[in-house]
Length: 283
Image (spheres, rainbow, N blue to C red):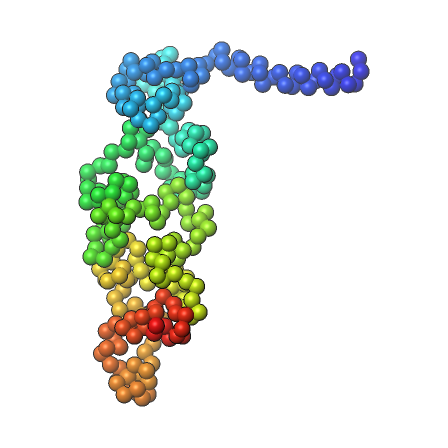
């Protein structure tokens, strides 16, 4: 037999092996498509009834719940199918949505959060009435604060983004399927997508504003005006000293600092986020 024929036969055998194993597997266990929802409905009438009205209607239970075939053959507690994890969800959802491509390195994934913790499997997730979530009108944000309890008091402070009122959602600023390490945009760029009047670049930059808005502002809420971490002038005095030849009553070195200078820095330095004209950020 020639060398060419041997190579040809070997190639055919290699190509036939996956087909043979697939045929053997199909005989030994049921495929997910072979298990109909009606099979599960015989016992699980509650979840499957809501499943028929949900976004996964028409999808076989076995496509998400591993071990469904074994449980159908022996419906006992020992063969109870597993709840779907993120890998099961991503077999479908990652193909059609690039926003979920970074889920494996996202903050929620690294914290052990599963898709089902935020998304309903058979029907939309019901937000619990406890833990203060009832105070938030927007449903996605209400679900977020059931875990992020440290943020909830901030949303109720006198100065806050309108999340509580439903005009803004947590996902407008945060990517629940990603993380800051996978986001190409800077923090300041995220904020200035809405707050465009303070968007740079400026000829004379204010370094804290250029580094990140949270140097001075708490985005979730603050007892101070304009979401400031600390009220003026103490916020500014953490970095700046007051020159008495500019802020004194007489304008001479050694003169007493005026009360106006200690009341509100932005009364004079209105270009606090940066200026195109004045190095002292006065306008």
